[in-house]
Image 1 (cartoon, rainbow, N blue to C red):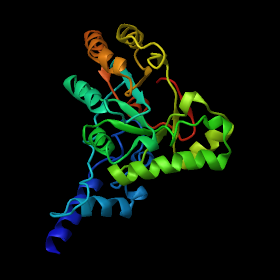
Image 2: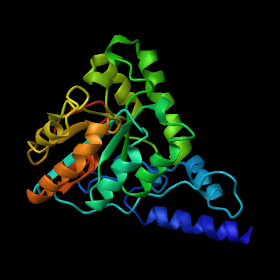
Image 3: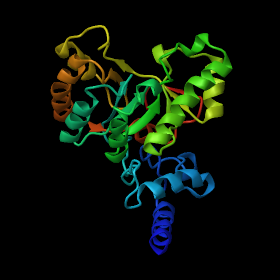
Length: 274
């Protein structure tokens, strides 16, 4: 009991000492309250803290839930920031994507499908969080949300929110509508769910053109402040990553998450770039 009490105290103190702890540390521009996590006073989630606390106990048979690194202080008004994003995973090659990003000290945002977060792939989501990447909601099964009722849209988002919270202990604050399919109804549901709609400025079309050279060239056309769309489920995209990361390095880009790029994106609002 004494060990449990001490650990609880340390976790609470650690949370109160940070601006936020979410799926990925958000940028410095917005207020901490806009970036929910178990360490934010007015968005305190005792259930999430309990999950982390239990998972840290010796002998606990369940997963040890990850903690995101501290928020970074970045000024994307001064730096050449680019937000690389990956949709439709986690897939079999997601760990390779994470390896390549780590080799370049790059952070990215992964918009995951709820049905893809399985017992086999859940460790990839935990690794995303632990390595400072951002996790976003891409619906449960890649439905075209604009063709659904408000209740059906909510189910698509809520099921994915629940599975990611369960396996990684984080609450996502971003969503990407599959196919970019959105309308006023989707916007309203996203706002109610506390999710900003993240679209893109650069589409690599890696789902269509399975050519690493083409994918890399399109990605490297990005300008400072752009959000780039890729997928972590295509082998050719993984093959393109070393080339495009080397080129973006050469151009002096800083790799940031979407929330680092935008600061505190507003729920429901659509974003294409900074």
